[in-house]
Length: 191
Image (cartoon, rainbow, N blue to C red):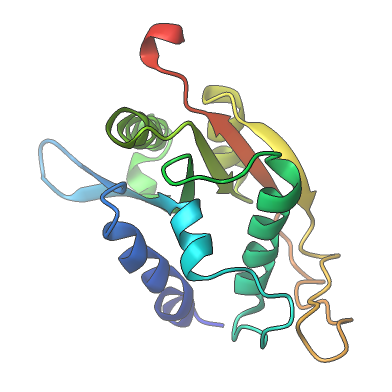
């Protein structure tokens, strides 16, 4: 699958939905004005309301969509342990930092600013994210105090919606496991 196809079929639909909620951020380089980072998020309650989990629906074109949908379902039904309400859990869907600006704190500050904004303007209490990149995982768990809940290894994940339910589309995946990470959005005065 090409990066362009993944962008058109997965990333772009998530981004356009997220932009409507005014919870996403861009970071610009002060001197040049170029965009050096972006992060997109939405209210998981609204996302689940618009697109409820359906274990018997047709498989997605890209198995990764079904994997994340299943992880969201596990979070809602098992990991979270509370009834979802509007503006309660911010779901961080996509984030990126230009390579030339990695390691300079851009990604950490961008994520913290977005979470602070969601908490301060709309009352979000938690953030949920699923990541496989070790550096990004470090930001969410070590710098932001996130707790890893359910962890799925894509190599052993069974694609239940495909054929006989025994398909393992990512058995040769070389990245890391993907956790549901829950972050409590603590007000600045309580940190």
